[in-house]
Length: 448
Image 1: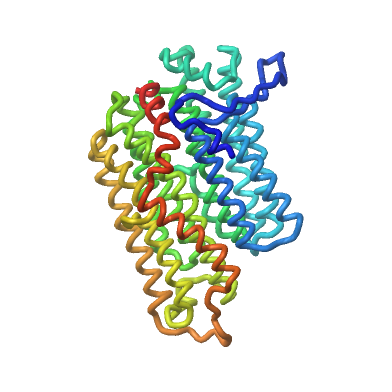
Image 2: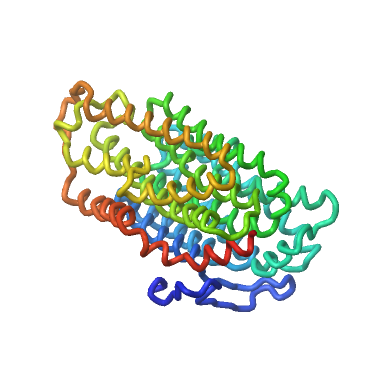
């Protein structure tokens, strides 16, 4: 209904809802959507039902998942910081409980680590925005973006402390290297459905925050620190697949590769923001690629965690060496898993190719050296996935002592629509690109 009511030709925020809330500090209940917000709302609306179908649980589990969904909707539509921050933090508690109650044997440590990293990052971000409010008297995103376009709006070194607080809070959430160490533990310990939501939707809150908050507010700081930020993005692309190469646990391996794919988004954003390039085909391609990669990674990574959950459910284990000869036993499962893997690798004809191609097309024109190094991440990711597929599909048959079932009818109804969506986006992505084209053009002009 939102998509049908949305006018893709209009670059501004649409379908606004505004109510007075806390007049003393100028806080309002103010929500609305532009092309990026709508894209993320649709992604959330796909990932949450996918996760609930992937793991049938009791009412308590479902209630916490729906609270998480509400928090995601609020985060992607809020138009002032106080409301955005409350929704942002609202996602933390149910996610912590989902890991802590329904996770595996390491759930206590993983849930505590997830909570501490995210909470401390959020506190740093809150203190930074309180500093901005005391100096400028507004929490409104549009007003703050106008202030940021005027140049340095904070005195002396205060601007660097404020920038550091906002950057830290968002970098932990993405996560960006080296603030990523909570993620493998959380994804590994979480139940399958929760891992799908963590990678498919919650990780996008950090990237969204970079687009909505950091880039418009601190253009000069990002330009000064551009090479260092690009280096962090390249490290996020190259190092995680090398670590994934050494993993024997399938879930942990996919978790590290998820960091790698979000690193492509950060490479595109930092390349554009650090060079402050004038609007052109390359800059707009970069932003379009980032938005597409956000969406495509959400559904592809969620599908990969779903398949890992199916293997664990059948075998009771999820090590790379715990399986073998699956192509002979479960051809349908292996076939659809291959589609998800090739999508993650960016194979032409599947959704993963579109975002990565656009990001690299634009980034090469702006920061060729960093982009060239980042391409190694594609190679390492391919090696990791091919190694895993060889072991799972074509290795010696591992006798499990029971029949290893292929996809059931319910599992087919769950996964096949997602797989078909991957093909649809890969073959004809224009229906998604049209949604945010005007938003991309406006952002390219505002951030140049």
